[in-house]
Amino acid sequence: MKRMLDLGLTALLASLLLPAGAFAENKIIYGEDNRLDYFEAPAARKALADSVVSLWKAEDVEASGSKFKLKTAKFTDMIQEQAGAPLCATEPFREQPVGAFCSGSLVGEDLIMTAGHCITEEKCSTTKFIFGFAVKARGGKAPAEVPASDVYGCSKVETRKLESSETTGNPMLDQLLGKISDQDFAIVRLDRKVTGRKALAVNPESTLKNGDALFVIGHPVGLPLKVADDASVRDIGDGKTYFLANLDTYGGNSGSAVFNAKTNKVEGILVRGDQDFRAGGTEEKPCVESNRVAQDGGGGEGVTKINQDILAVLTIKSGHAAAPAAVTAPEAPTRDTAPILDRFGLEFE
Image (cartoon, rainbow, N blue to C red; front, side, top):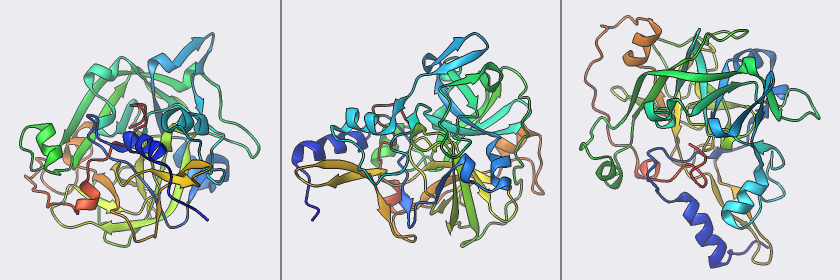
């Protein structure tokens, strides 16, 4: 019978989930865990996944001839180091490597769309963008090294925003007041054009409504690429700069493209959500498990909508006026806006 964990592990777990200067929040599993490795995904999803990228610290990507070696750690070992207990034996992907800190998507010949909290001008020169970090065959492993042709540098941050529509002007005060960074996006120009991959289609004029089917592709907890289907829009009110959905995502998914399951077009960028992990196991044998709720439970995962600032960089125009209208975002539910840190040891966004 499962019991409460001792205070030591509980405190360690809590230390991973408290604010430490990050603006985004954690993600969560809703209902069944729908995450699939690349090789398990349908062909149409794989085609889209080929244009999804992982963000890495440059210090974790080492040049080696015509390839780059990736510095990673086993998922369960990382949890053990950070929380003092391993992942529970029932957790999927526990033996896979983690290394990326955010996700992104190719939206132009040399343009990557991601979350605003994943990149800054200061971090541009120390961030690498890597395609193909995925398990591509049953029984296979994620690559320990990748071809140089799949590794790109950051040339410039073309546009970026990380703020609340109702900001006080003080990020720390905004966080204390529970004001979410509902405007959380960035477009990065790479150091060269991407070859062998197609830019994803972005929806310039969304008609999403509550209940519409969605899926997300990215790198939860920095793991090899995962496709998570069977999600839907939970709340998309008029005037909001974001919407809520029951996507199966974690820290590391920040910046992931969220797709309309009917059109396969990108509707927004995954930026925040509920707490990732919780204490599991027994008092004698504690472990760490994913935080799971019912399909309609939790606070929902926050997705920044495609907006005029993004479209301007992509040179796509919607049917509305080019100048973005002033928008005031309503307060989100308290459980969705709680300032929960969405990374372990400042490794994941």
